[in-house]
Length: 74
Image 1 (tube, rainbow, N blue to C red):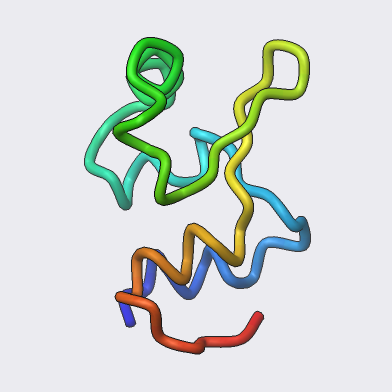
Image 2: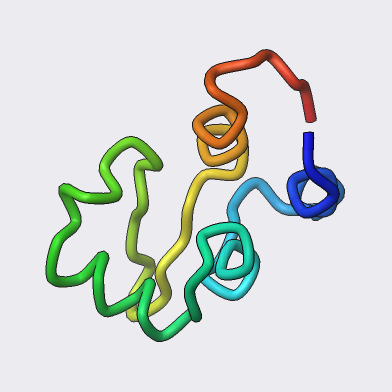
């Protein structure tokens, strides 16, 4: 597991923001927001959701997807 994924696991929230995941996806937060807004199906495996104008990703699901479905806890 990469150091970046370990940092995500240490976040004390049940969700992740585009700022949290940008480095792992090799993108920037604004691009992630725009892409999810225009093509949510591309991110469907991460189960993104909007709260008002804020984009969030369930932390457990995102980490699960990024580790190939490994049971990593957290």
